[in-house]
Amino acid sequence: MAADPLTALPPDLREAVDRYLDERLEEKVRELVRRQFEDDPAANSCRIIASKGTLDWAYPPFILASTAAALGMDTAVFFTFYGLNLLKKDPKLVVDPIGNPAMPMPMPNIITVLPGMRDAATWMMGGMFKKHGVASVLELREMCVESGVRLIACQMTFDVMGFKQEEMMDGLEYAGAAAFMTEAARSHTTLFI
Amino acid sequence: MAADPLTALPPDLREAVDRYLDERLEEKVRELVRRQFEDDPAANSCRIIASKGTLDWAYPPFILASTAAALGMDTAVFFTFYGLNLLKKDPKLVVDPIGNPAMPMPMPNIITVLPGMRDAATWMMGGMFKKHGVASVLELREMCVESGVRLIACQMTFDVMGFKQEEMMDGLEYAGAAAFMTEAARSHTTLFI
Amino acid sequence: MAADPLTALPPDLREAVDRYLDERLEEKVRELVRRQFEDDPAANSCRIIASKGTLDWAYPPFILASTAAALGMDTAVFFTFYGLNLLKKDPKLVVDPIGNPAMPMPMPNIITVLPGMRDAATWMMGGMFKKHGVASVLELREMCVESGVRLIACQMTFDVMGFKQEEMMDGLEYAGAAAFMTEAARSHTTLFI
Image 1: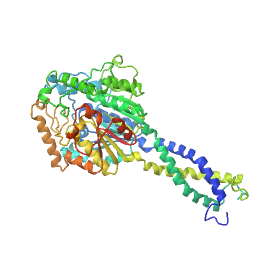
Image 2 (image 1 turned 45 degrees about the horizontal axis):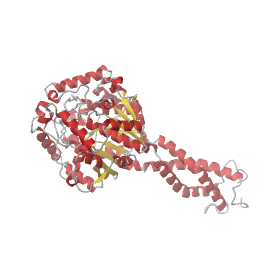
Image 3 (image 1 turned 60 degrees about the vertical axis):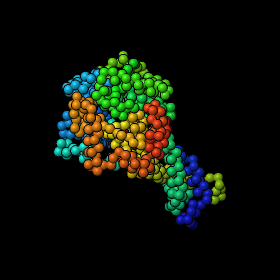
């Protein structure tokens, strides 16, 4: 054995190593993989697409993203289409009762089309959240920023829909769908809101 | 070698064992890990958020959740915002034709705002599903319960939107977004409906 | 050792080999598993559900699916409910300004219900995308087909909503929710649009 260490393991030792591998490897790998699954970086990564721009649909992305960040997850939200409204400095979000018969106080549409009903519904929804001590959309957005959630504006729809950079909040990233989807591919939690 | 068995392998033997491990290990581990990926617990877990409360948007969460459970997946649905309507004992779900030009029979909005059109659209949609032998929303919900899907009401929006526990179906869990997102992080299939 | 090569290694050598294997194996396997996680097939698979059938909600599934395919991901879109409209040969997609106060130019609903406003909004949205050099929905759909995205029609809602096979584009698959959810379970990126 010592005579030719560089060529090969002697057959008897080789057999012993083989037996060892057969016996022990499966158990060891299973344990290591189990641990690695627990540390799977995809389980620690959350990617959300926010595509809607009304008051009611502003809550879910900011609530879910700030929650994920509070849990220690690497979190980013990609704002596209109407969702870009949520990134304005002063977004003036409204909720429309029309065509939404699942609202807490549904009304016939012949009423909901009347001028003033949109303002009334917006005022009512804001009040409901406030009354129950829930942060406002702007406060939730600030909580996202403070807890390290990356807010990403979709460059393409930003241009198409005629947004101006000066009307947007500070600290945004601008990126395309390809960059975002590359990150989503490494995330278990992927939500289109 | 035999002189000091407890301290270390002699260098030449060590080198031979190393070379042998390099050869055999990669192939064996690759196969073991491949098998383990097939048992990836995240591939067996489905988490759905149901946020809408109309008849048309009631079908997708119950159909997808009961399907996932039938496939043997660990499945839970988190009902939040308007989606809480779907958990009422007697939900009276409607569909609104207004602002929905993709409905099977789209109508001009000047017609869809008229009183009675919401009832007509609701009646029509329910009939279409029944005619094709699809279970009703309440039947689909019951299938979810029977197949072990956990139905979770979002505690925060439950309070904000003024739901009462006595008007809700039995067997619900109540939880917050943090508990739900923790489970979603361990699931490949995560859908916001 | 050489005296009985087939039965076992001498105890002292065996112990040394064991200890050495324990030390080296963990590090080697950890590295191999880490590399295999980077090749996690779920990170290379994208499954999208397209459930809406208006012009504005036609862009996201086709843009995200063609982007995923361009990144080399195995990609499929399951069209269900109103989303089946997007698979018609000649889909005539429209966007409705009503109940959508987040549109680039929101209007009071008392105006948006007027005949002609739906056509105006549709014309405006198509123009905005065209002006910025974005492909049309039909071009994006063609890009999906050319880049290997599988387009799957939900058989159940196809039947329920009364679609006819002859009005649909060529090259579609028809499948149920169970087949689709089985594939989604093997995908990190799962989106309900």
